[in-house]
Image (tube, rainbow, N blue to C red; front, side, top):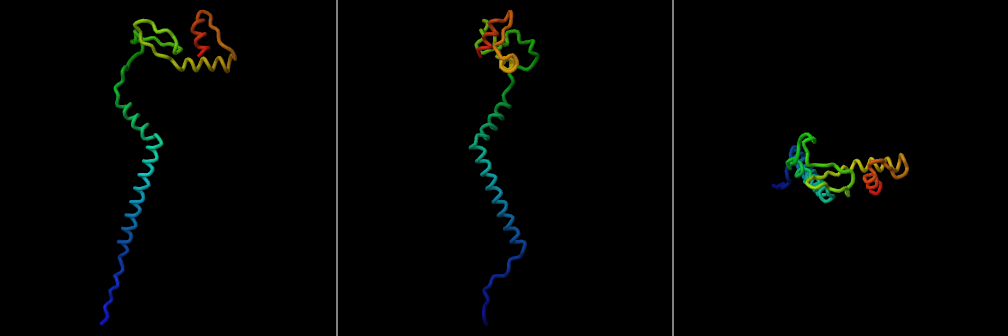
Length: 123
């Protein structure tokens, strides 16, 4: 009598399971590669910084009229009054530059605010 040591055919569900497992592993590898690429491109660090920033408590939240010890200045080289906090309004400089360069076409002169106009024109 001859013995037949041939393997019995695998059921189709088994081959389907193997195929699904391979797809899952392949998808996990692709996802891991995407994460590595984003992290090395700096996106990961940006996300971490955003999360850290979102967790910090606000130093002030309220009506700006309550900021009695704070002055807003148009240029970085504006003098700081003694005993005051200073906030530089960078958007004012941008608006000034737009007006000077694209509307008027020359340095602006403002009567009564010559010192500030000189600073803004020079910045």
